[in-house]
Image (cartoon, rainbow, N blue to C red; front, side, top):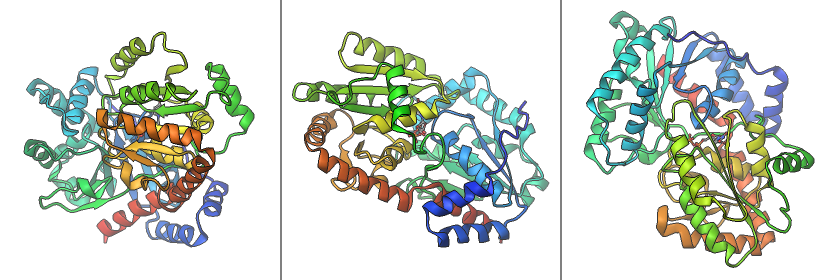
Length: 420
Ligand code: UDP
């Protein structure tokens, strides 16, 4: 069902050297030494989409990095029918606190799909890393003799709502057989007995999404999409999948308030992840809402539009991420890395990135944060010097804590711990 794709090789020595010049050499040496300890260790990463969304974004860089360090890493994506993804998106929404309970029929599709996809699990691997709930059930199909030889890690990148005990029971039943469960923030750690850890996510400073772009390329890409006149009308950007938790509606409401005082334009850019069936409907709904509104751009781009997203983030004066639930929110670090003041919802993984008032602003999630968000935007637009300083501090924070090198180091340390 799921052919193994050697979709990309390892990072070159030159690329590793480029990371070393960004972080300090000591950190790089630690990574190289861990790589030597783990040389030849077989790792299989499994998730549910090759591109679109934060997990794919992280794996796209983590896998070639770990290979370059000497590990035998492969990355596989489960194959499934649309009915599976409709079910798993309900599960995702449910875990993030929505009331709709996933239906029982979907449970059958879930287990059938995981059973079929087990055929692609590498029984020769030492470590299997499974991301998010979609492929979490694979472990149930590992024969006892294989299971005994392997260590399985489950990485949860979503915002686990603590509101309902049955949400936690659901996760518990899915994950109790794992050797290690890893979350994207300490506040999501489970209270039951399971070996758990936290890895804060990270961005790749050298990827197409984040590398430097010449200003003329940024301008050219913006004008290709009709985003012009940014001196007179500073650009405010929101990059996110069209998903109910990302807060597009609140960004739009805040923008309407700002426009009463200050000239500016809003760009909301999103794309379709193959494991997210809600995109089209939410996009269509938003499209209806922005119809006829001046200075609002709404773009639904292909998932591999990394350079375009990079250019929009660089063109922005301010970046918004007003999520109401957020496992981490890579888009926040992406914006901060580009020296932009980011205004984010005070939920999930966002406050681990933004120190309110220092390197960005946090606002209450949802409707109650709209006015504050508008105030912050107005303030930043009227005080460009302050905005620039805030942006610089944002980049420093990302350099310290949210780069790929740290993410790889964290994962490899956990792997070494499991193999000892
Ligand atoms: N992204 C993108 N194009 C889009 C929407 C999102 O490339 O149209 C990228 C975004 O730049 C980021 C990732 O997808 O790298 C989203 O990760 P995040 O953690 O913010 O949210 P998730 O989608 O995983 O909930």
